[in-house]
Image (cartoon, rainbow, N blue to C red; front, side, top):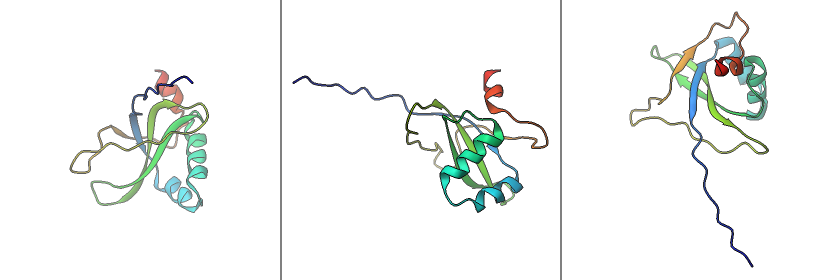
Length: 114
């Protein structure tokens, strides 16, 4: 019988996040499960269906509720891996969060290629 050595892969890291519009946030709140929310976000923002993304409810500097979409540097083959959202001791995120103009066509994969 032979032995198999498992080599752990590097942790998945966020590239950046996007603050979504309040209207899209309300639409996401109507969907019953996380999988459907992620599918809708990937379709609307032009994200590769196999890219790891996460949704997080947040409070902005004015104490307003909002939702951010976190885009990770990993495209999976079969099963979406587990991921964590890195933050410091004060609860601040360790990646950039952008506001985007939702009145224009958005394609995240094209932005990542640039």
